[in-house]
Image (cartoon, rainbow, N blue to C red):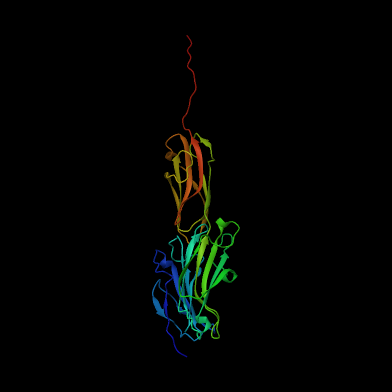
Length: 340
């Protein structure tokens, strides 16, 4: 048996110091084919770099799984990438691009597009070349996390095979998806993932194996309400306390209240109340907050609009608004009489 040395390049963790590197622990698991013997290639893998494989690669090949553990509470573990290596199987690379620059795990929102780059090299076409060297299979799986799900502990064997295609030519192709196909009745509120995998063909030495695999998480569109003031209300005394309900705030977003004189007009830039919510977790957030003691910011009578806005990698979205009339003027009616 010839001993092969494979240099594992940790491309995907993407050199992400990003201020969160200290909270992620990465490791690589090597699985020998076809026996299925596993070996942790390293207890800790840096955010970028290379290392020698722990075991010799048999004629049946070996699969390398790149995992990361997020030291949150509870601890979250994610399979980031998978590579299969053997003597004559082609090489494949999957890259998922979204409008969100977050680089630990690709992610997007239910109403946004994303792009998948699939690059294949090493395909052969000779009459005597083995079949597994001539083509590979691209699979697209979709899976819902369910109501309130975050993907932690998800059983990916339950994912739905959405489509598959055979690739017989070397080179790069880009697939464009206007919207995600993650299952869900309310398309704005889907949450789950799409996985794109390139598989080798089965042969006598090894089963069909993952050459490369990557997933993108899809999070719902946020919404919210402003309670405490109703549309068209006339306010003569102090401004009432507000209750701000926010649902499915996108990861790495900032949400705030702004106000301006006049009727509601989408896209208006107003003044910001000294209250905001910076959401830095990697999953959506639903929460309720109260706002009080803000009366001094409204300096004149008349029609006013207040808006709840959220800033995400996709732009600024209005979650809720309310308009009201302010009249602090006190009118006194009286008469003066004299008795002579």
